[in-house]
Image (cartoon, rainbow over all chains, first blue to last red; front, side, top):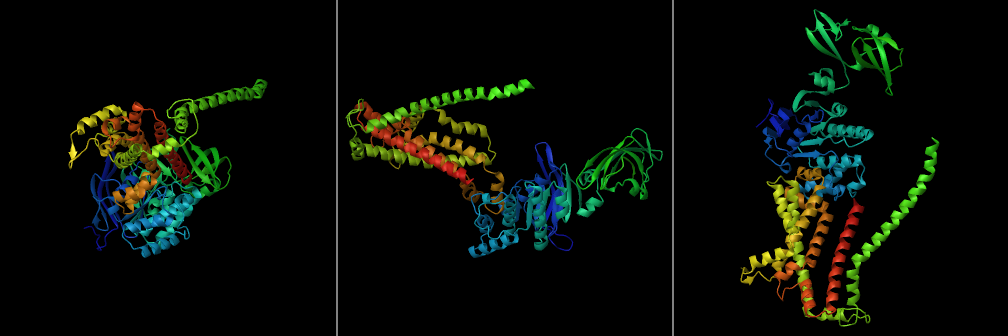
Length: 340
Length: 284
C-alpha cells in the first residue's frame, strides 16, 4: 500500500518504472507521484519517453520493471479495460459508426450503468463541454475541435481516477488549440479531476499544469511548478528547452572572462565562474538596448547584423567580438547600439 | 524568349492530336475486351431462350420452355439446392475462420508469422484436382455417427473453404490494417474487453470488407467444379457437376439455363459488393 505521510493515497504512483525497446532505453527508472486533483504534464522533445510513460500508465504497454499504482492499487499487470483511467487520444479516436451519445454511453455501459442513468450522464457531460444538442451527430459530421470535445466528454463521463491526455491538441490549428486549451483549464478548475498530460508544446504545459515533468532521453530533468521551471531551470537542457535563449561560449581564466577568440569581456556575476570553458545563457527578453541599457549591470558594445520583424517586436541579431546572439525590442533602433 | 512563345503556341495542338488518338485506341481496346469477356455469357444466355432441343446455332425461336423444364426437374433443382447449401456453408466456415485469423494476424505478434501466412495461403495455389483427390482419399472411409463423410455436402464445404478461407483472410488482413489502432485502444480504455471490442467496435468498422469477402467466398463455392466432382455423389452433386455430367450424355438447353442461373447469381453477388462499397465510400 502506497500512502503519503498524511495517509492520503496519491492518484498515481510510479516506482522505478523502466521500459526498453530492444537496445534502446525508452524510459529509465522513473519515480513519480500524482496528488489527487493535480494536473501533471510530461513535457519533452519527441523520443524523450513521455508518450511511452503515458502508455504504460494506460496499460497499452508493459513496463520491463517497476510498479504502477492507481489510488493505492497496483495495476501494472492489468490490461487497460481493468484500470480506472480514461484517455483522450491525439485525433479523438471516436468510434466512427456510433453517434456522439453512443460514443459517450459506451464507457458507461461497460461499467454496468442503467439506461436512465446513462442518458442523464450523457446529457450532463455534453453540457459540460458545451455540445448540448449534438447527441445524434456522427463523428464525421463534427469539426476537429468538436470531435476533441466529445472525446473529452467521453472520458470524463466514466469519472476515472485519472484522465490521460495524449497530445490531444496537436492535430488542431493554432486558434482552436488555444481555445481548447482554455476549455481544458476551465474544466480542470471546475471539476478538479486528476490528470496526466503529454505534450511537446511548452506553452500548453505552462498554461495547464499544476506541475511539469521535463523529460529528456527517457529520464526526468526536472519536476516543478510552471513558475519554478521558468524561474529556476535545473539544467542546461531545461533552460534551452523552455523559452528562447542565447548561448555565449566563454573561457574563464585568472579571474578574467574572455570569448573564444580571447577578447576580454567585462562580466559581473553573482558567483564568479571557475576556471575553464563555460556557456553563458541569456534570455533574449532580458537583454536591453541603447538608453534602457544604462541601468544594467553588464553592458557590451555590439554591432547589429540584421533585423527581423516579428509582428509585435523586432529581433536584432547582434555580434560582439566572437559572440553572436540576438535580442527582441519593441521599437526599431539605430544600427549601432549598446546592450546589457 | 521568342522561341518559347512560339513553342507555347503549337505544343498544345500537337498534344491534343496525340491525346485523342490515344483515347480512341483506349476505347477500341475497352470495347474489344468487354465484348470478348461477355461473349460466352451472352451466347449461353441466348441459347437458354432458344426453342430448339439442341444447344446449337442457328436459333429457331424464342421460348421459355427450358426454364420451365429446369424448374420442374427434380434433378436440376436438387443440384441447385446442393450448390446453394454448400455455398452458404462455405461462406460461414471460411468467413468465421478467415476473419478471426486475419484479426489475430493484424493485432498480435505470433510466432512463425511468415511461415503461418504461407501455410494459410497455400491451398489457394493448389489445383482443385489435388485438393479434391487428397480430401477424397483422406476421408474416403471416415464416418461420423454412422454417416459417411465422403459424399456429404459437409466435406464439399470443407473443400471449398480451403480456397475461400485464404481469400477471406487476404482481404480482411488488408482491411484490418486500415483500422485506426487508437480507436481499438480507446475501446479497451473505456472498459471493454478484447472480445467486446472486436464485435462492437472493430467488426462494424470493417463491415464493407466482411460483406465483400463473404460474397467472394459464396461465389467461389458456387463456381467450384473440380473438388465437387471428386467429393459428391448422385444425391449431393452441385450444379456445375450435373452440368458436366449432362453435357457428357446429352447437350440439352437445360445446360444453358443452369449456366445462366449460375452467372446471374455471380453477377448479383458482384453487384451487391459494388453497391455496398459505394455506400461505405459515401458514408466515410
